[in-house]
Length: 165
View 1 (tube, rainbow, N blue to C red):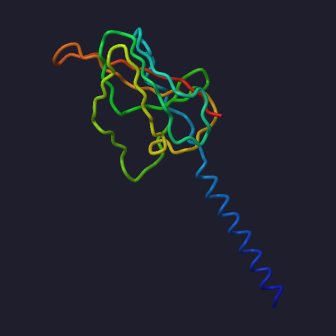
View 2 (view 1 turned 60 degrees about the horizontal axis):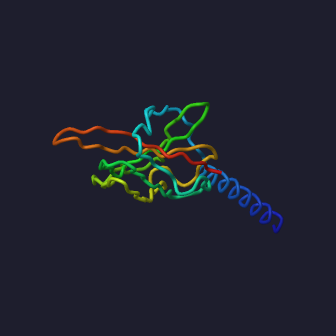
């Protein structure tokens, strides 16, 4: 009788361990990159650029700090949206968003990037991309707008590259 109970408990323990391994491996599973970047022309405004505070981040980061630099006499505007991309096989690919029961939405706000200024922002990655990333070369892409006159504007894209270890 004691051997039967011991055997039953051992089987249950092995099954629970197996289930735990399956669940935790799914949490850290990285979705393959299949969609190429649509941002081929980036950083083409002379004197305006984007950098990351650190050159390398850990693979479980939740946020990244970027700094906008405007070394021109022109005012630009940018908003909340950002895009995360990874460099693989000599090309940039969009990092897929993590599945969610709710659609992702952005606050519609315009931040001013004044002439001859710097501005630092914290970009929260976790709510869109999760908090586990494969190592490699990545970039954040942000759009900036130059408002020429009422109703007229040009959109440019800035990117800042960094590594995940």
